[in-house]
Image 1 (cartoon, rainbow, N blue to C red):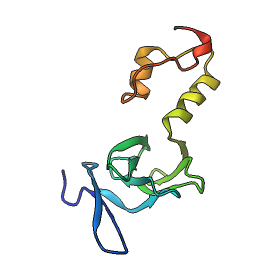
Image 2: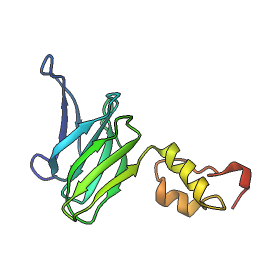
Image 3: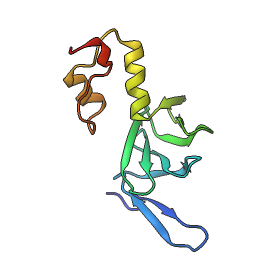
Length: 136
């Protein structure tokens, strides 16, 4: 990874480093912690905003722009990520897996196929998006 291609979470009371996230690209100068303290969002030169679990340092969501993501933060309730990019856009993203699955069920008249599921939820085991609709 490039020099300084890490995101470090520090305890400001005692100066101890709590976690290192490794995005493998340069993280921009503005990151944010969710209101409940469980998540960190960062923007990067690879045109992504990423959400990290603060306790483990594991990336849990990635949202894509067309240019560098200059700023990223959480909504006051932590449910949404807001990001701004050099592409001239600001975007509001749903990022919790369960919220995304529920939204897919609301929008589609069918369940996601296994291939679609693997594309959108690669770290989640396949399950029916809308169990009441049956197997695709």
